[in-house]
Length: 353
Image (cartoon, rainbow, N blue to C red; front, side, top):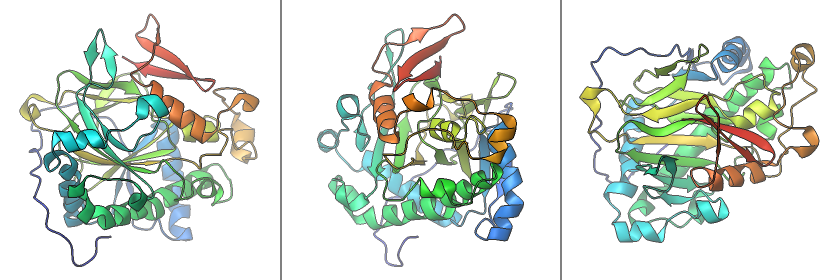
């Protein structure tokens, strides 16, 4: 985590918590205190397995980052937006549409939502290795802290989760860890700011294996519950919302569910506030082919659900870059139930508008 001598940064004042009566989703809360020992993971593995199989979502507490350290990262997450002039931001714009690259700024209005409406989400992506990426000058003093934060996410949170997901499939504990080296391109810290009305980001599943969303007070995240109804995710201070993505669903043969989620307008008493968030996206190594771990005795008992034939399965690199370049930029086929479909690398990807 951050070194003892750290540069000063302006404090970001988060929005007050909502006081409105809201119907929240049932998200399992997992105490991560003992997740770093084989015995602790063995005890937690059934909880993690059931959470990610039934809900595809869970909430982590006692994850090794203090509230003060979390607040510090929130302050740093605001730097790319509050301390970098628009002209300098343009110099670090991502080339997502052209090349499927995620690093740098995604400007507002990059994605088409519906009926000519463009998004109002801005984010800044930091891609490992942090020090090889070009960054705005204002962010340079904080790169060591960002790197340390990414390491903590990968080694102390992502890897224990991957180990427990492997145990849930009765696979060797390191099965998924071996597919997710920290050196893999595509591991990102995502900092987001959004100001708009109604749906901010339509229903979707994430591309990677596991997404970590460090909870913040603006209640705007909704998940599609098992009964098909959209429900808000409750803010738990200093917690992490964890969800599975398409990659984990494909690697697990459909056993773990890629969670359908969206971002919408918050409750009335939070409207007008910025939703500033920091995320961590974990991807498999670029050359990993996204086929089920068919050697799992669990999958041999319950069966495998594939998104495509094994011989047609894309690599992580192909799937990640194609999804990044196509989202909000290409034609979709709209079904009668409002679901939109795209074919990405031979895999049908659905959006819930």
